Length: 383
Ligand SMILES: [Zn+2]
Image 1 (cartoon, rainbow, N blue to C red):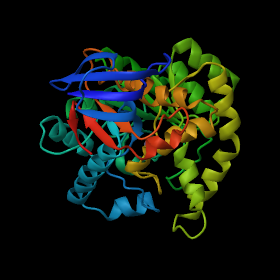
Image 2 (image 1 turned 30 degrees about the horizontal axis):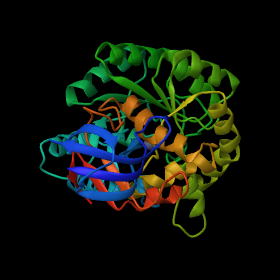
Image 3 (image 1 turned 30 degrees about the vertical axis):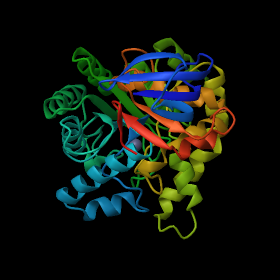
Image 4 (image 1 turned 60 degrees about the vertical axis):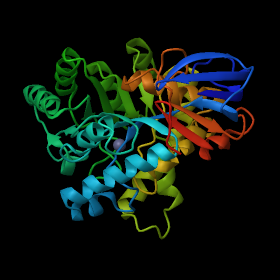
């Protein structure tokens, strides 16, 4: 198949190329060359498939996340995950990392997709989150209260089939009584989890909103900080020293606040999102300007944050964190792919043919990403 692109972004920060042919064979990019001769399909703009480094497949954007999860049977949760995987793929998300759900649901969905039985993105799954007793997300998590329990829990998640580990370093917005600014798992507990996970080649993500928890997690050796809104100068220095990624999930608090009135969300959720939002823009801009590596991830599944709206996060990286459209695309393709470790998220010879055909150059019309004309995963058209 030959796809002709008016303008072509390969996922790196190299300048986009005009008039390019993408040659696809057996699901893989064979060649990218100057256009000429016949072609099978034309698009104004071609970009790599999007990579969402932070999603929760069994959550569908319900107003009251915890309340609605509690009412669902395991079978219903699985069906939601199947439905959300299909929705994400059709909207252009060709790879994602599921950062926590009940039991093995995301792991089962990943396997069914890999076996070709259901449609969905490439998935890296964390299994259950590891939190302190009563910590953020405890209702779907695995509670740990010492370094030894952290080691045991990493081994359990690995046995269950997890690709990566998710730690809860601070309180969070959606759990009643959990204060986002306060630290939860200790540095020692997280260090042991990181040592054990890294020994098995598993990456570690830490949910961390408050300053102390962000810095504890970075010192403990995590690979990414999720949310990170209350980071400080020490955090920025630690990010750079450790080479850790920041996945800012800007859409998450924005969706909560957009539906603050009459949306049916618990009052504590809206109040906590407001507190975080006050500091988010200044801190994220400071971190990006200082050279912290940003990877795209939306926390899809949280209130009003739907799996088929990941392109909104790419726009938020521009509006809130101060990126150019090209930088935001890079963060949401190649950088996010590098973090989740399934493929490179780059369109070059030998890489999987995961790409989107768009009706305009994202450099001039970033919104084109929200309305893909066609979506391809491994060379097969899925939209
Ligand atoms: Zn999350």
